[in-house]
Length: 115
Length: 112
Image (tube, rainbow over all chains, first blue to last red):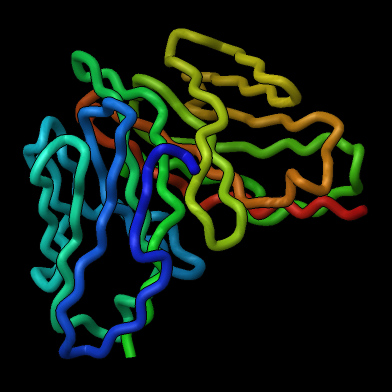
């Protein structure tokens, strides 16, 4: 375990379902991230939360809705997804001091399949 | 875009040989990082090199950074089967230090 825990590890959902991905870290980091990794594509940054405030939303469709209730937890709420949303969703956390980033710690990811 | 681009996209070498991967980026950075990803898993942070550093070592890893050429290289010496993975470079921009952007990665295969 890296210190960043993602659940579930695998998720199969229909296009009309609503589900949530969960990420948890107890590393004392103050920034958390959602990335999407599709086959043969670079990692796509979806959302950035720094000190629990969303500071980045990379034009992600509204069917993805992030939530960061505290510095240790991050959620990604999913609804009415499309088959092309099938991918590995990775959560990461890091420590940011005065604008300087340190290495990211990643979770193992949630493999999402939309049917 | 400040996205790093790795070269080559795929590399296959014999166990025991050295593996060199390169990364180029476009904008000024605070630091550059290298990550490894085993198939279908999360990324593991390998090494971070700051913009004022030229070379860094960690075990069998050696990273260089040339800010004038906006490029970096990752050298893995005496490769092992367990080094088979995808390797990514990632950069953060001075203009937006709250995030890092990953390149497309180099897929490294070590033949026994």
